[in-house]
Structure formats: structure tokens, C-alpha cells
Image (cartoon, rainbow, N blue to C red; front, side):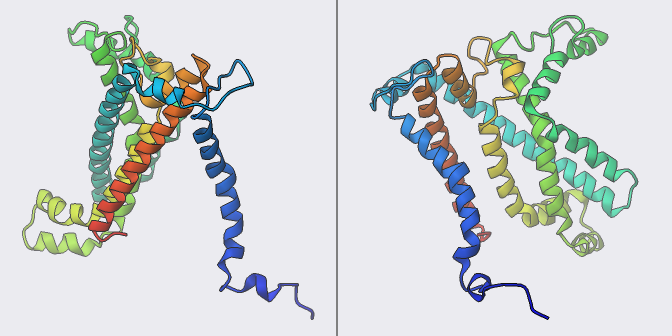
Length: 300
């Protein structure tokens, strides 16, 4: 019986370019080309109200000379650092608790993981709307309603610059902790139970096992987790937009939201492209820094 046509030169595993070509085409079309266009538009004076534009360095000069940019970068740094630290810590604590429950074969673990994961799969806009309802400063706002039951007055969650920044951090942590937990929970399952059993035999407590077994074994996963949640948080704006819109004033305007506002509020495509290039440079710098840290740990 005649076999199907399969040219030797196409299935030869010594020719990886044939198999890599579709992936390279997808990466070029959906990643490299858009990135090139953003870089190109950053050297123009293009806007959404006219088709013609000229190439110029003026947009970079105006953007980098604007004091608002540095206020936004500071807000972004506070938002990203606080979000990453809290997501990492809470995700690790929940993952450790879930792993201990798995080892003891406690019921309901699948349901618990599903509930936690539901926060992560929700669209950012929906999460922003939900938290806007929870933090509504009127008497029917859930947060202030709970505070009133214990005799505490209403808090201006979204209209006070200090509490508004805290509010978007809390909302982002609630959203991103699930991803951090799932990633670290998967890492915990790769740690042999025999290590914990041997530690228990030697008289080690839960805290000692966590510090001397869990943390060293999870270190590569933790570093990868930091990379992913840092980049994700840096690009967050869909949740902030319905929650505070960047206000009050610019108290919660992070770099990604600033990019959106410049393009669709000021109609400056070139200005938004410059901000996008700045975000790309920050992301690449952080990624390279984390990669060097991973190499020093012998992970890559």
C-alpha cells in the first residue's frame, strides 16, 4: 500500500528552519512589526486628527521635558512595586496552604482553586467596575457599609489621592494574586514530599521547613513569577480606567494609562508612541536584570 507523500527534506529533523518558519512569521507579524511601527511613529508628529505627518525628534524632546512624565513614572513605580510584593507574598502563602491541604488530602481543594482563579480570568474592566462599586463613597458602598457596622466613618477611597492609589493597588493585588498562587502551587507540587517528611522526623517545625526547604526549592519559580507579574502590572490600565480614570488629578495615572490618555485624550499618536517606547525600555531592562539574576542562581 502506497504511503502518504512526506518529502524527506520537510521531515528531516536536521532542518529546524522549516519548522520554525510558521512561528517566526507569527512573531514577526504580531510582535516585531507592531513594535517597529511604534518605534517609527515615536519619531514623528503624527496625531489622530490628520493623515500627514513629518519625522522629527520634537515629540521626544517635549515628552521627556514634561514634568508630568516623571510624576507618572513615580506613581507607576509605587504601584508596580507594591503590587508585585503583595501578589508574590499572598500568592506564596495561599499556595503553601493549598499544598499542605493537598498533602493531607483535605476535601474541597479543587473548588478552592477554582474560586481563587476566577479573579484572574475576569476582564480588567469588569474588575475595575466591581471595585468601583465596592469602594463607592456613598452610604451603599460595600467597604464603607462594613466600616459603619463597626462604628468607623466613611473613607474617601477614590477621591483622596493617597487612598485612591492604595485602592488601585488592592484591586490589582486581588486580581493578580491568583496567577501568582497557581504558578507557585505548581512549583510546590514538584518538591518531593520526602523532604518535608525527613524534616519532620528531624524535628523541624512548619516555619523551618518553609524557610529551609520551600524557599530554596521555589527560588527559580519565584524569580520567573516576579518577571511575569512585574510586566503584567506595568501594562495594567484596563482595571484603573473604570475605577479612578487616573484621578483624582493624576494620583493614579500610571504609565500605561498615561499612554492611553495621550493617544485617545490628546489625539497624539506620536506622544503615545514615545510613552510606549519608554514602557518597552523599562520592560526590557527589568527582564534583562531578572535574567541575569536567574543565571546567577543557575536557573538558565
